[in-house]
Each structure stands twice: as structure tokens, then as C-alpha cells.
Image (cartoon, rainbow, N blue to C red; front, top):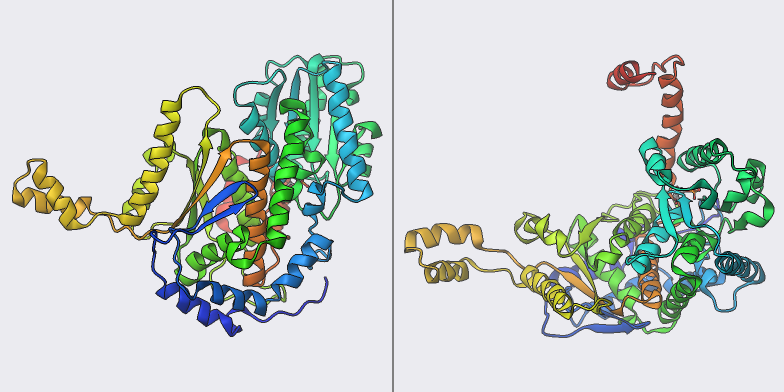
Length: 518
Ligand code: F6P
């Protein structure tokens, strides 16, 4: 582990100043706070802000040596000290990347070009999980929502129903299986890949390995599994799983929605990278978004962040960002291992709007705690029903305003009287109809859902997470917390198959192993 030194956040001189600034700042939507970044507009007018805000942020970032850390991120410095490696996903979207990235990018594009020109493979089954899955799902749903000439299925879960559904009804002769896994050891992916191999063999496919491609940072393991080298695309240990869409992991998206989508995503992300590197702090979208999020979580105590994505093509953006935010920031020690005594990563949750309005918005409007909301919407639609899009926009803006303004008991009372209730009934009902308001939000507007705009949006959140990691003083690029459960599952799997039960399990786990063992 690389040695680093860091002052705990609560001991920084600028921290109490930041907290006081946030707690005294009003929600002042009449003072417009719009940032243009890589074609996106980020509207922070409905977040807390005051004349002291920019100064408080600058002090905090200076004390955290932010400029040097941002430079290190882009220069491939060791930004992931617990794994002693860079987190160099920005290199993957450079127009002129280092030679090994350029070479692999070329191989992917050539593979897609050749496969397309041969009209080969009607079906793609993408097997991968977490960061080796969500980005591909997101891109293919976003740009293939109206259908594509190739079918794509995704298989992630170890649940056998997932692989069963993934393969059901497909013609094995026409099916390419993509195994996407950084480690080439992930239990879910390896089991599912094995089932796919058995399926091809059962169909008497003469050379089943020709039906596989692997995308991995462990090409030797892929080769040992039987995949021919010309069907192995590699990426590097310095690409975190949740940042891997920019690598060859996107190949299934290239095969489904076209390699121009991959190129567009990369150039949008690159444009956001440049914005993040060069825009002044007060006009820097990732920094401002990060600091508002940090204010909501650590200074105002909100426990979660809601993503209200007003575009059904972006439904997969929600799990994608859940992994990005929570796997990166769900930590309680800083990079030196000291406890962080302010709350870090909020729970990130959401659903596309307007579905979300009919599911949990009641809680957002009148629940005891509420949550800040990121509203995400496209200015222009890609369908022919302007009427639908106008209403979608109206709902998005209306929900944001309702969360902010709320409704007083007096307003509710007057409405009740106008609706014909007598004074007693009007008064009683007003207590149920009032809404507290004062709930912060951000509105992010994409001009249209293009690959460029989506790439920029993803990079916006990546850099937001990076900035928050710096201020909290934690390492956003490792995920040690997921390991314990994986190890325990291996032991329990053996016990469920008849191995002696470890006496260290609690009584309930023992009971269920005995009850469920096969
Ligand atoms: O859940 C932990 C994790 O390591 C994620 O970070 C990663 O995206 C996922 O598992 C899949 O890992 P791999 O790409 O190595 O199969």
C-alpha cells in the first residue's frame, strides 16, 4: 500500500467554515446558478448557496491539495493507494491515448467492423456483472431502445433463471457470447460462462470457443479457459470495474448500437474531462455538483440522494450511478485508515420519472426526512410525439418546484374552502395537504440523448465522486467491503453441498444451511 498522509476532515480549518456556510445559506432559486459543461446544463439554483459559498469551497479544496490530486488523476499517478495503482479511466477517452490503449481500441473497432460487414451473429449474450455489466446495459438501452438488428441479452446474476432467460429461444449457431470480467474470476460470470459453453456443446456447435469473446484485464486466464487470443480484448488493472465502459468492455454495445456510439460516448466524456481540468472552480460542474452533494450529506445530514431520471431510455443510469457512487464512496475510513467522523456517501436510489412520481414521490414530498434530488432530462426528444415530451418536461419542472416551495397549511386551507369544504373540514384536511418544501435539488439538462451527451453526463458524475472522495479524504477507487461476503459465500456454498458446517456461524445461519442444503 502506498504511504499517504492526510488530515482528518473535521480537523481541517476550512471544515467548520464550510459547515457554517452551508447551514446559513438559503435556498434561493431566484438567483440563477447555471453551469454549461460539455454541452450539458447543470442548474444548481435550487441548492443552498450564499455569497460565502465559493470562498468556503476554495478553502476546503486548497487545504485538500485538490489541484495536485486532479493532476495526478489525469497523469496516471497512484490515486488508488490501497491497491497501489492509478485510476486512469480518463486515458481511455483521450483522442490520442497511449499506444496500448490505442491498439486495443483499434482491435475492438476492427472486430465490430468485420463482424458487421459479415452480418455475423444475430444474438449477443453479454455475460458480466457490476461494472462489467451496467455500462453496456445503459448504452444499449439508451441507443437501442427502439430495436436493433442484433438481439442483445445480459446475464449477470448467479441465479440460474438469469442464464436460462439469457439463452432461451436463441439459435446457438447465430449467438456470440461476450464474457466481460476484469478479474476473470468473478463467481457469477464464470458460472454463467460455463453454462453458455455447455449450451453451445449441447447444440453440437463444432468449435464453441469461436462463439466466445472475452474482455478482461486477465488475458492469461481467458486463454487458459479456452478463448483464442484473437478473441480476447484486454484492459488494464488501472481501470476500475465501475469505470470500464470506456474500455473494450463496451464491445457488446458496439456490436448492438454501433461503434459510433462508443466513439461518441468517449468524446463526450473527454469534453467533460477537459471542462473538469480547466473550468474555474465557481464554474466547474463536477466540483459544484460534488460540493452541493457534500453539503447535503455531511453538513445538512440528508441520508440519501434521489435520481429522478426523466427519460425511460436511461433507466439503467440509476444502477450505473448507484455502483459508481456507493461502491466508490461507501467508506468510513480515510486513506490513512482513520475513522471519518462525518457522514459519507448517501444512499443513491431512484427510478425514471414519471413512474417514480407514482411510486415514492409521496415520501419525497411529505416524508419526515426527504432527500435531495438530481433531476435529469433531455431538452429534445427523439420520438414524434411532442405532446408527450412537453408533458414529461412539465412534470420534471413541477416536481422540482413542488419540492422546493411546498405548500403552507393556510394555502391548503384556502384551496379546501374553494373546493367547497366547510371551515372545520378545510382546517382538518389542510394538515394533511401541507408540504414542507425547502428540499434541495439539481437539474441536469441534456440537449438531446446523444452518445456525446451521455458520455459527458457519466464523466460529470465520475468527477463529482472523485472530488467528494478528496474532500472526505477517502479512496474512491477500491471496494474492499465487497470481499467478505464473497469469501463467506464460498464456504457456505460448500456447506450447502454437504461439507461440515463451520461452528462459527450463528444459529440462524446454521439452521438455514441445514434446512436448505442439497
Ligand atoms: O462487486 C465487486 C466488483 O469487483 C465490482 O467492482 C466489479 O465491477 C464487479 O465486481 C465485477 O468484477 P469483474 O469485472 O472482475 O468480474
